Length: 290
Ligand SMILES: Nc1nc2c(c(=O)[nH]1)N[C@@H](CN(C=O)c1ccc(C(=O)N[C@@H](CCC(=O)O)C(=O)O)cc1)CN2
Image (cartoon, rainbow, N blue to C red):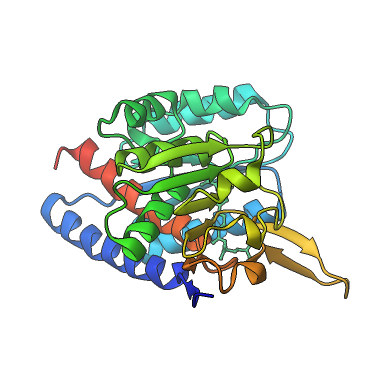
């Protein structure tokens, strides 16, 4: 039985946001440029509306300009593409983000491919995915970037460690696997069709839950002492009828087995917006050439 350390993503994200804010001040003093982030929300999904509000608030707190475009759910794909084409040309906009998920009638891949890769602060454009895959400078998706920051803070060097990523999405699983490879981990991407998933997970020194299924990863899937990063944010209704957030990992069962674990909420989630701010500053610096 080990004592499981709780990785405090909320505190780490706060420190990162402060660091970005002081770099924004220095960048503005040197260039006269205020980094600008345009966030586009289509429709009124309640969770997305909260995330977009928090992105705007934290962007301004970091000394950057926040430009919000809130469009009705009836917006056509052509109208959305036209807005992105305009944002691509605007000098005061250094980062563009389209909040996901989009309404069903819009092809998300077509939308993401229209964003100028230099302004793609989500890192979802195929150019940035390709640059990450071949190991050259890229804008890297925020949630995976946050996961690796937390891991390096908890463990130091990740070289040689066995990492299992459960989930193969373009937004988290695949880019996170690329980032872990860049850190010299031995990486397995597992998914719903993986044979004997519990046994594959038990190999992991680093186990990532990024599958979007509440508490799917059980305590006895975890190798004693492993570091567990839980990317899942699932809203469930408890027996008392109240809603609560749980991750993809059965958190209570992991206690006493995992060496360290991120909680939900307060683990990976807050890192997503902090890394978005860091990416926006990086994009602005590259566009200004400093
Ligand atoms: N264009 C994008 N869309 C989406 C992304 C993304 O990175 N880019 N990620 C998610 C949503 N997301 C940011 O957009 C996000 C998710 C969660 C959190 C967060 O801080 N979570 C808190 C809990 C918040 C709650 O109560 O709901 C936590 O885990 O502590 C921030 C941002 C999908 N869409």
